[in-house]
Length: 156
Image 1 (spheres, rainbow, N blue to C red):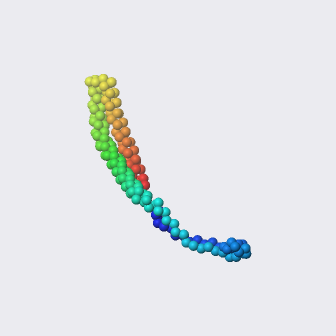
Image 2: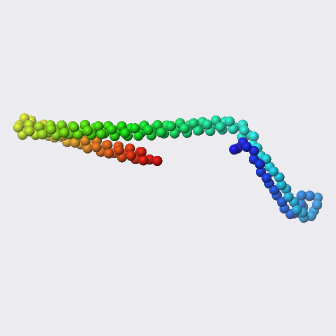
């Protein structure tokens, strides 16, 4: 921690002229040893503000984590809802395709008997074809949504 005192030991020695006694002009051994204590008291003044800042940062990170988890949950739920929606649309499209095929058969019989014109029959053919295209589109959208959901769930 920054606010705790630091203790250090030091030592220095040597042989030289003059030694520690400057009045003696001869070669002599010398050494100095000691301990040093450093304590930065200025850190104590900012310690409480730093602790508050750390607590705010910690709570901010917790909030961000909760938001991330909530967004992930919402996204996964949205994928599941889309999958359910496309399955429902596909079942309705299957019914529509069956009904359109029945209408087209009836229209073919009416065209053969001269009750409707060929443009009416073509309109019914186009409607049946459009129903099949909608079915295929919804099937593709279901597959794409399932793949996206699986990719989303598989993310680390």
